Image 1 (tube, helix red, strand yellow):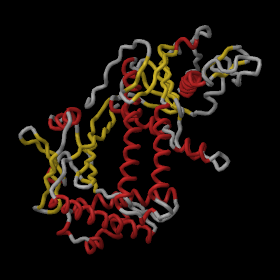
Image 2 (cartoon, rainbow, N blue to C red):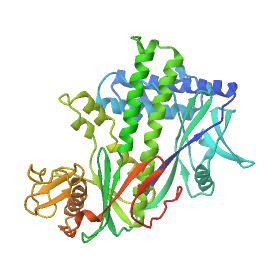
Image 3 (tube, rainbow, N blue to C red):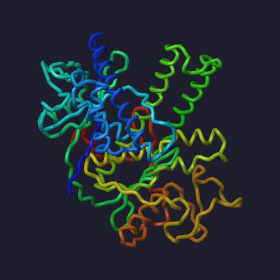
Length: 446
């Protein structure tokens, strides 16, 4: 069984000429005018379907932006974007949708390049993106291409990858293009099962054979992400107190808004860099053991854990946590290699003993209070201490096998249980770990 796997790669241009920047800004303005028009018409008619929206407003949109000013495919993608915005608004409600980011969605056909609004070309070992504005009007954008990015482009030229609809943005005079590369992947015939427990300060993973024997386990400290959050929250406070001084943010000078924007962007980039390295390391381990991946179903988790009863500091900390981001990154990197990813109910995974089913409790006053760095739980039936995150991976394996209608016990011996866990941490230059494990390095383009 094959499925489509997508990996989006960001490309940057060198600073463009004023003429090209002006032309791209005009194209983006026209495009966003179309999107806003379709959204307004959809809200008036209470319609979110792309087909109904097309019937209602497509011809009328030609009066807003005449056909001669923009390529017809931009009108088509604007309709798609507006339909997605309307469906999301109907689902979540709230205030009227407002488009704050300046972007344009570029249509592409793999089997008919003439029908696409962009194409990638190679001239004298340099790469260029050619974007159609309208008939007989194109903009050529040079691309800064690293070795990693070049692998994707060459794989596309050789027919191993296809291209999806790209997104173009302008950051000053620099164009940023997000191009999704698509390929057909068959699902791997896996031999083992990897379970992953994602927490605020750590990620714990365990690899089991089909009969329940533990093959490998690792505890990865991700508190580096919390350090970054704290540093930027404190910096944002100082910046706010120094620059705002009671002024409404929208009336701040442009240079102040740009400074705050750059600071926030760097914050996001630093966190994403660490999550990328962590997720790649996890997928490399899964490839090494030829294992499918099982994780907790944490969708909408922040709606459940954020509460008015919590302290503001706790709510802020939880809102900045990266539970779903880590899972999403692991999933899309795993699917690129054909690794199956499943989710199970997270209820009680850290509070039930996987060996006897008893409810775990905190160590009592007379016991050793903190044998495992504050993560210890005690089983009164087994009379053993367990690491709560490691126990969660065992319970995830058990739940997954039960869901697959194969009732299975866990074959990990009680004695020396915690000796099976290897320790590691996420650092700026990658994932550091103790112990030796031969791992295959996952290729960038397949």
